[in-house]
Length: 414
Image 1: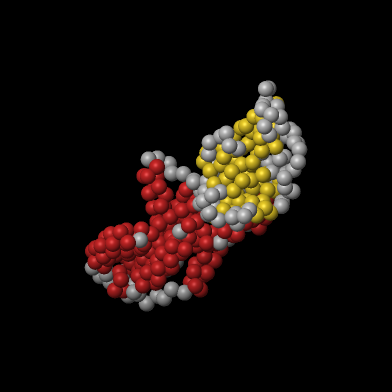
Image 2: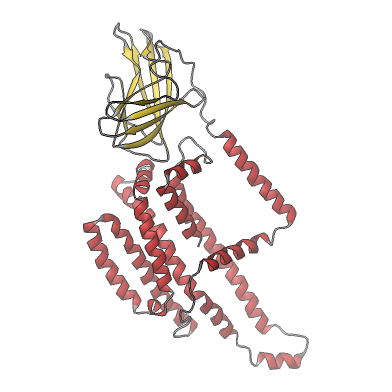
């Protein structure tokens, strides 16, 4: 349940860029990787939830077994009661009640967790090490609809696993073979459809594990599959899990925790965007070409808008309609003053990141890739009589991008 709920947030953020941009406001740094963070959170939260659930189940098991063997006040009654008590039947009954949900939820969770993880592993293999976070974020955002489809099919498969016929031992080899064949054809036809293979693998693994567990429980066919998945069950289980934790915290401790969380949230939102130190003093040149926050549209349809961030930098929002790129100018400075050197640092901002986004400062520099993790630096000096325009040419595939640009003017010494 924990992995599945976090996966729903991941898919929603990938499908709704406005929601992703809103969520990144509360994250530290100027360029938080929201989608990558959610994928990591699925693994971390799922691991924590597993051990918490395991501890709770062991506690319930110990309590239930203790009730069957603890003595009472009357010895005669205890002898009569213990002659009819069977602790193994009690334990077996507790396990039977968990079979259906423990078979359905892993299938639904795997459909959201594994495809996003496999994309990261594949990019790591291609890169020969750690993959680019910008490229990974772009891939998840581009395949958000595909992840949603796989997740929906995984949810349907989870409901089907509740049927007795889908949990029989014969299901493991049959579904496993069908998954291998179908996955091979899907890889040849449409690579993203290979993600459906994780659903088949999860079903086959569940059927294999159930066969071993039934052997350990000494039973043939527990849980005939009469349970039906309802959202009311999800809400009830989530509420009971939260209540079991909060009930062990007194009112004073609860107020302290809520106060700490509220103060942390207020501090995060109040201090975001103030992590970068202010740049050195900027000398304002002549003839401003645009006004702050003015939307500039070129003849090709590409457009950009430059907005001051308040700490000496600019946020540049670029929309490219073709691969020709666009020349970005800045308010207040049209040319590099004679005898001065202009330096610029460019860095991509989320939520949409792209490894193929490039920038070229003037005509005398080469185009460089704008990184999402480290700032890309450019410099140009104006030592000749020919005026040097203060423009940056942004190139890349069609789409909308956000950049942080930090310009600095300093004496050139020429």
